[in-house]
Image (cartoon, rainbow, N blue to C red; front, top):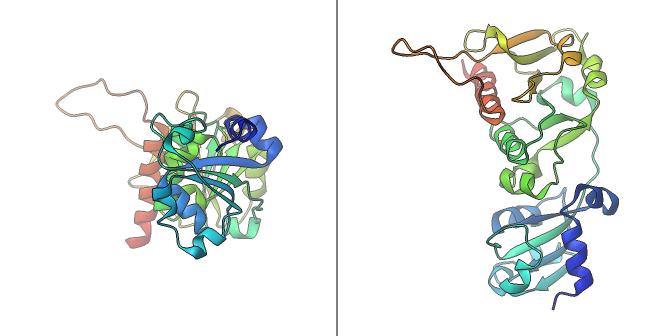
Length: 261
């Protein structure tokens, strides 16, 4: 049986302030939980699961979990953040890791300025994972990585990505004058991304749909890029902007396409 205190603790983790204070977050779903169990970075403190899910776990997998609780679907619904709970929920320790400037200089990284929608951040993380981008740097006001909706929309990709919250002005300043290292930014004007020369390392700055890249960050951008609109049949009206996660997917694809030319 789930105790009232346990239910209260788990539900408290749906709020950012409690996740920060207590150092834990929640994750749900068979795929995500299985990846967490097999992860060397994340440690599961408590796993709540139905008998059907637990029966699939090996003894080795069970040994990685601090406490394993068999629950009914009715009990799971009391702690789940989903409309239709998915057989298992985990309370996971928030890991501590650092960003090494030397590692950043050798890779392609995303920089996200004021991304507030959990679904968008989750999709961007999933996209970055697909394209082999291992580091994401977010402005301090962006949505929390461990928001349950972000975790859910990543489909487990957050496990393979290191995401940091930074003062982006200070962060970009660190990389401004490094020879051969580019800071790219996506704008509504600039060089056409489909014809621009792109490097296999650097920082790609993406701004919010409503405001774009903040004015205070624009001076740190070495190269402005834009995704052109395509107008057919003489039409002039098109969408005013792309969804930020869609735009990020296009940009990541173009950077990686340079590697196989």
